[in-house]
Length: 133
Picture 1 (cartoon, one colour):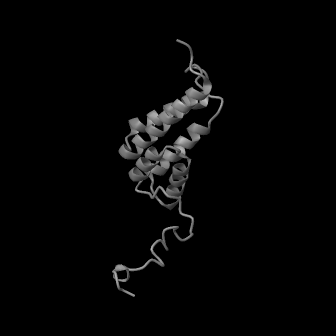
Picture 2 (picture 1 turned 180 degrees about the vertical axis):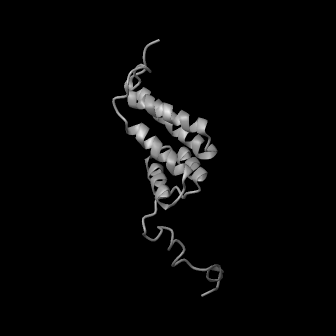
Picture 3 (picture 1 turned 90 degrees about the vertical axis):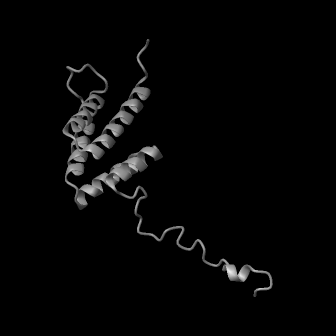
């Protein structure tokens, strides 16, 4: 059995990290936080041996920021968590994470919704009866 290619390994680890973050968002349990950090450390190591130091720190730093934001919910923390939502590509995972955080998964653009004028200009029911005009 050969080693999986780097892209496959990275995709699998990223998914595991996102699911671990979701679990921590739901439970806020320290064991789940430690699991997030363990996966982040492995990603930063690039899948190297456990006794090798990590060459990068992006996922460890990001995980620490996210876990702290989940524990201390306030406006700045919610902004961090909203940024995470924009990075999650899987629609089901994005909805689950948004629900766990009680955040709207749709980004706020400040523009009027595309649906605001959905029914504007259409005839009312009374106008659609035969002979009505």
